[in-house]
Length: 542
Image (cartoon, rainbow, N blue to C red; front, side):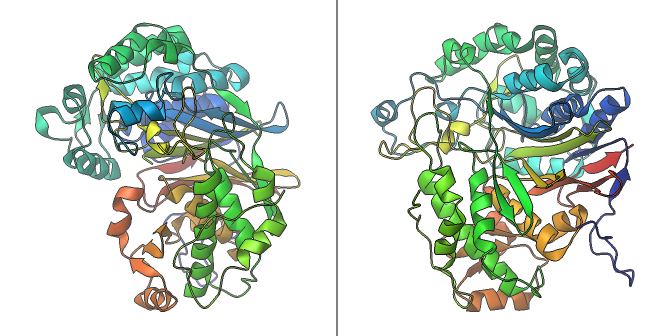
């Protein structure tokens, strides 16, 4: 880590140069969001203020990915408390949501979209909870940039135009309000088009003035409940009014001298830790990051981690999750013994331990606060439903449940679904060294494995680590690879037993994600910012 992105011979090892600054750094997937966060820092706000300002803007300029109708999770180093904080700001299932109710409706599995996938949106309460504990600016100031872009308009950026268009054309807009909002006249906006969301601007003003109660108990809650009733859904005003975010203890594992922190279940953070524990059992000295040998070990480690994730991860308030046993290094050695350097497992089953659509951003300030935060609707435009008169798209996080009543992740009243959202923090004995995340559904844990291995095993800086070509394990023996991998690498992986697919195979499963990251130079305290080449965003500091 902390090497130059350019070798001594002048060869560019990453698609972008690092951003460098001393007083603060903001890294997001959209430049307007990064600018809003930076403006908050320069105006005297701290990293928590800037993170919420930036993510609120993303809910306007990347509306198919995120917004106030989604969920939020945060991992952050608090300089004042000198500790790592973790917030689960995800919503819960409605009180009427039971396996029996879904069976009565003729459903054997959760639908991909629609009103029956809507859990309580947790983002607004999470934003308010974060600002109340750690922020320095009132909610109205923090939401002001998002309100301005929704009201006055913004130009649609390049990747956003492509993904917005594909999502709309694929039929993800599920009601008239969604189509009127995001594809007026039947067409999504083109690149460079100026888009305004007056209904969303009014909703954001209402939230800015009234806080969480304006969303969960006021007119917005009434409109959400009315939409649910009109679509024969289960979400009620009482479900919204009862919602709260939860401060939780992060989980972690040591990887070759560093410690990676993740959010605990109900998120998939444990999958990244499990995969790194398995990879640590192998000597990778001398292996190039994009070599078939290195890719094979990473893919196989991820395969085993996902099997455990699927078997065990659920809401710990409703079922026991054996976190300590799963993260035991002895368990990792037993799992690693199942792997061969010469042959891929055709699939993997869970062991027995003995003891989206999403946006990610990271912000650091001059006081040493470091925020790693994710906000998401899950699928493109979430449930596909926009609450009439509000501009708010509702998430489809309920899709993360199973309808198997015997599984720990089965749907139940007041229960949080399995969640893909996982902000992360890589630390050493002196504190945070890298705040990072990789958005994109199942690819998030896989992205964490690949980024951490790039940083630790191959000495990359954060921009290099994000820019490296990625794989996306899809299940069974199937893995999708980005086009940047040479044909010889793909052929060798196929010889090892992997079913190698091209990028299109991963398109509707999160693609290859998009990451952001901040490194903290241990010698100077300077911030080194990186922003994924796969998105429209930037790292910007001052």
